Image 1 (tube, rainbow, N blue to C red):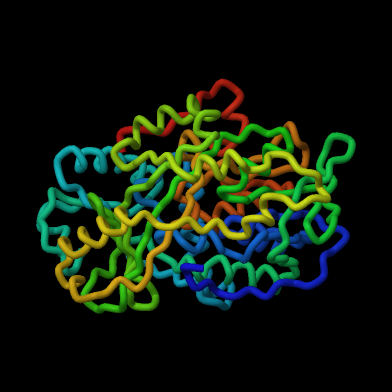
Image 2 (spheres, rainbow, N blue to C red; image 1 turned 180 degrees about the vertical axis):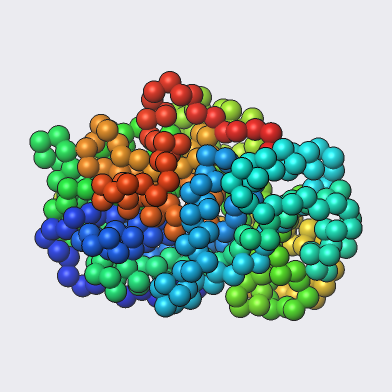
Length: 441
């Protein structure tokens, strides 16, 4: 495991029955289980590996409203409200700190793009402001280059990915949730055309509602229930520096560089680019993803290699009494891109010369699950009554995680949703809505 993750003790007894089964122990699944348990629902959280073992512990750790797709803003504001009181609420450490976030604008085009987003900030009461010229380096301590400007949001923050989901899962347990690690769900138990429970590698659990929060694995699991979920994966590569007091407190993103100060005194650093492995699903969903490929081309590289053959050999159908792919790969642990890590390191030292004497302590890769419009699905699946999908967070899932967990829990429990779930409906892929990423910012 490239990241040291907070420990969660697994429960030892698998119950015969519960109200809701949550599949997937990332921040979305853990948050969903927490809010279900808080609402008095009996809930079992099943994770094929360990809590936060994949992208939920490997991301940048940003909790930002700044620059969000307008469809996500209400949910993100709810999430930030939760983040700000979460340590106290859980009586545990998530690493959340209100540090502010910064999008650097190197030229007029980038400045105009960020300026175009400001009306959405004003509409929702977000405290984003545009900085110009030398104002940028007043908040970006230690930076040498001068830029056209930056979009600055003081009310945003960061949290610690290796701590947050485990802390939330532990709190869910204290509220009565059962957490089963190394317990893959092999498939749905369907009776009379609707969900009646799940079949895990450790036995069957009866439940009338199941939440699928499987991250990069959701498409594969959904397919076993006959659900076409257009989802692809991209590889993000990240490094961690040693401790230093010379860097900025604010989380910042600019051309070829993103960084966040960590709770341990080091920095999480990325080049900001991702690699899209070409796999069989790339052809299956090609028309779905073509618009976003065109829009995000500058920050995306395609790669054909072992990933294609690994997924080609992947079993798509299996008996519920047979070993599933989820048991064969407990943790999706891709190697980071050496070129992406080298680029991030070079840009870090050029922008912040003080880091030239700060070593790289570790690096890792993580697989981000994405949808064609870069907006998640948080929705019941009408063709599979009793199944709720919460996935496809497209690299935005960590910060929005607590709010998304609350919305998912509301849907699963039949409560009034905390925000309007319409933008996240699954039916947008089939009702002629022609979902596309928004452009212009």
